[in-house]
Image (cartoon, rainbow, N blue to C red; front, side, top):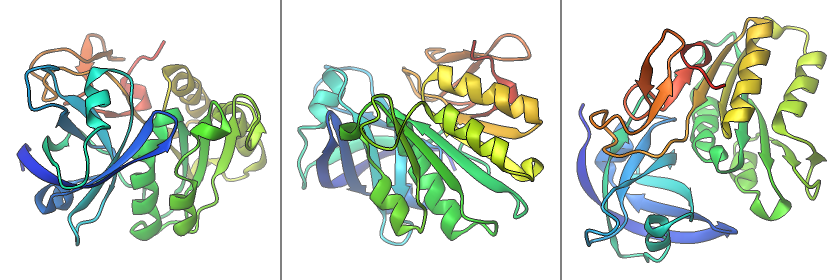
Length: 265
């Protein structure tokens, strides 16, 4: 089913960390079709400024109630306008868009690795794996700069998942990067062939995870965060290098890619 413009009702729009907001909207049609890893293309203003929509990952979708949650960081004019919206306002969206995360088979143990705002789309993935997948609960590793920027822990705990947290300054969890915790886990885990990686975050983190997955001959899927123009593959505004030569479009070919499909260095 092709995505179309929808007008959703805003249920809440609350700050959950410095410059990070959670918005809940209601659109039964969008929620019914949403998959983990997909995104919404959001119009932030009723005027022509800013002209371009903003791509924001889906952090949760409830097919029964029509509730959709997005988590976004305020970084410019568009998201500054978005954070001022209030319950009862309407939101112009296109979606769900893009290629989402494929589900693992029941023999696999999923490891989810998120860095910063990249944790947002992984919350919906963790929920889906915990409630619908036949395999074991996923292991989740999340990294943030400081304790103040951490989000998502309560959501994961409600699913029975205790996330491993690390921060750059050591203010919560271990003082390291998520890749350091992943390396520790790989050393301890005996049945490495049963693992599958899912990750979203800074490209340097993804590149390191790609190397680790290749060394162990494991499958890894990455959700890329890129600025976008049209959001539907027409404008070539969000290219990523393909491992086969040329470029792929993050909005249409992704935002989720198998690690071997793309070049990150």
